Length: 567
Image (cartoon, rainbow, N blue to C red; front, side, top):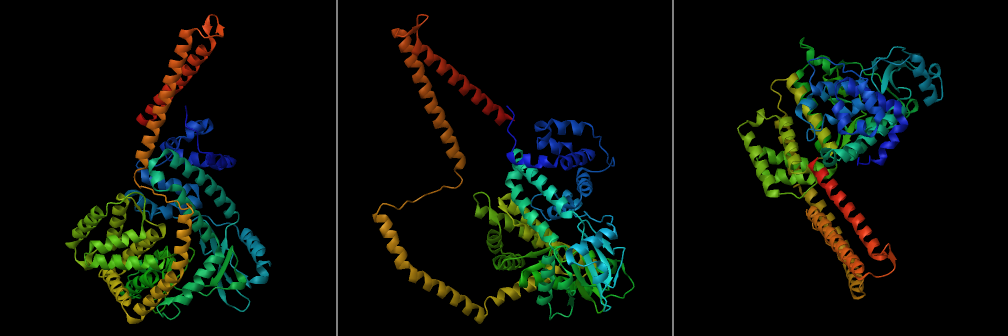
């Protein structure tokens, strides 16, 4: 009997056309095995027929992971953004696929200026001509979610206007709806998807994507970033205009400078590249370790270099946040790596990660020791930060530790910064900077004012606990005297044993009942107890029939269970 498909998939059938487009694209790039693993072809005959009509169309020398990237690019902005987020999941995906996903781009043809004008009028309540003295028809940049146009206020101020593409919200909503159904299918039929919590990851992706679509949130991000680094002369944040911004429009100062991607190719000597490498890395470490608010996509195309080697980020839609607990754990991990201390690194890892199964801590410490020992032969100045962090993430995965996405996005950002730094300056040393930050922040915890503040906090919490203790104790004793106190115990890691015992006990009871039914029916027939039907006791006959039906059902259930286990 075919396994019933998850009920949530039926929601995606309201978007049949888009689902068929997705299936057609997957088939066109020779990835029909994905459809088969999700059993779409088995549960939906129309999908099976649709696949058969689609011949593969991809370069003959393309690898599987290249075809995955090409298919994501063909499916549009939602899938491109998903691939870009997945490129940070070194704990989930093979290195070859990560390398392909890192090449994803979402440059698309711009929409017409008339469509942009309609969006501006709807969002700002006035036509473009009343808001701007001049509005350039050709966009200076065009991506899958939005495009940017140069404009000028009537007072002469030049600005960049980021306008969301028309109907992009509706398109993404349909794609996310379909993805939700597919994620639940993956969890139903693929063990790896259940382990990695595909549905939970998709919900996090949904939140991040809608965050990028909310330009008011990006407006707040720019304001916050500007406030944090207002005293840093090496960093500049563009000015934003509240009156001319909304959920779908963001108007900011037009930044004139040179993109960092162009600086990397420039050999004229106009730029102080070692200074830029140092400044960019310090900026990123300040964001991560000190402020806990960092840019999630600091690739060279998102950074401008202004006169005086000042850096300026352009896109603030993908910002990440680090909780104080996670920041402290990062400091501990960096300090532990620098001093080859596996216990400190293990503690930091367990603070950040979520445990999905019982943990063998000593074995994890031994593995981390071996990992750090392999890097012992590498001079600290030559240590590859990205490689080490990714190795730690994969090691955590082997022990059933699930890393939060925001941490993996941060690691990816550090890897980008490290790569750009080496490109700017062959002597660039991110490891030395991280060690310096870790030591500074670690010692900051021991400052008298910090210790005094923490001691005060602990004293207040202890005082509250002692004040509430008599009342809590009285309530506990009252419930104990009244017989209303229940204690529950749960032994982790024994769920499979419990399920096996339950199954065995059910079968045992069923067998006893069936045997009793057969024996009692045989006794009734032997005694020829009336009423009779064709000379056979009626109740004995009914008992045999019921026993036969139950026995056949039990046999069928057993055979089906064995068949499922073997497949």
